Amino acid sequence: MIIDGEDKFVITVIMAAGKGTRMKSNKSKLVHKIYDKELVKRVAELAKEVGSDEVIAVVGHLKEQVEEVLGDSVKYAYQEELLGTGHAVMQAKKYLEGKKGKVVILYGDVPIIRKNTLENLVTKSFKNKEYATLLTAIYENPTGYGRIIRDEGGNIKAIVEEKDANMFEKEIKEINSGIYCFDIEELLSALDELKPNNVQGEYYLTDVIKIMNDKGLKTGAVIVEDNTEILGVNDRAQLELLTRVLRMRINAEHMRRGVTIEDANSAYIHDNVIIGMDTIIHPNTTIKSGVIIGENCEIGPNAYIRENCIIGNNVKIGNNVEIKNTKIGDRTKVPHFIYLGDTEIGEDGNIGCGTITCNYDGKKKNKTIIGDRAFIGSNVNLVAPVKIGDDVIIGAGSTITKDVPSNNLAVAREKQVNIERKD
Image 1 (cartoon, rainbow, N blue to C red):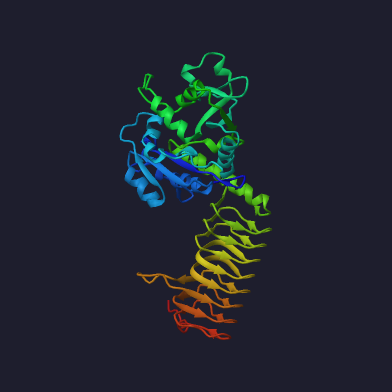
Image 2 (image 1 turned 90 degrees about the vertical axis):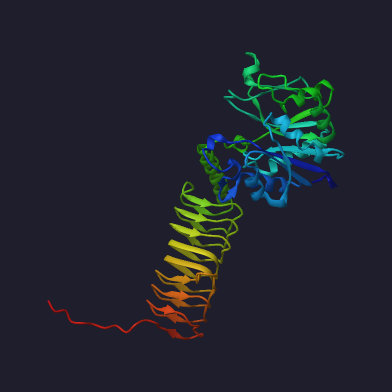
């Protein structure tokens, strides 16, 4: 991680060994998804984005599922017995020994922390030469959370859990998020001193703070600006809540950049979507990750823009339209009840109602290419692979199986027969 022009060593340890029984699932809760991305994958990708040199996942229950999701993008430590957060970090000691720098502790079920929040945490830890820097939050109702106890100089003296807090400590509104940035060498030293001196017989990572304070080591904190960032997932209701929080966060960012979203509650815009200014997103629209939409477009309602789509400027995507792996040129209209898959469409085109690209032959996906200024009539089937030239008109109701050269009219349908009714 680059701080003030210097490359600082940072390693991240992700806690990913919990059972998550409240999810009521045969799957690890860490592989449940928000916007098509597993919780633990979101955390691992965040660790890489903030500049971690190495990422370690401490896995246990249903570890095979977590490993399948993360693959070789991280290294693994194994926690066979769930003996507390301190014990989990102990399992990663072999990756920390002999290294100098910082270690960030994250959780695989706390997936929507902002990148700049973690960057601020690590940067402050380095710049202030703090041996432990905590991410904390201010809660008006802190019941149930560990309280942050500070001395007169602002150092964090200890973290007191709710059940151990006295009446004065319970009035403290600053709480521990469980996310830390430690000096690697001092953390290793403190881990050697941890004792399971509690009713649960577990090793608490919070005890590291007291150990460091007893040594006179400087500690500090960063107070998170948005408390929703430290929300975790324990059950399906919390999974839905975090999805909702992320949806509103993403939608708000697009609106700040000049996109009109008519109903932020029903627009599902996934991560890493680019939308140009003055584009309007109508209700009940889903836009998947990686989609690029130009300026002055109109999308929806009831539109489904799937992965690998690039949409030009001044494009209209109407109601009940699904597109996937498709590129659409400027000023083209795709008004309603249309499916476009594996398609390239040029500029100034019009795709009639009920048109579909038949891109799958049962074994592989095939491509449809449509040139500029093409007019595709209603209820047309374009059987890929097929190429439609510039300035082509396709008659309504046609099934096109062969290429159509530029400046041609193509009609492919049975001749109409009228038979007189005899009652």
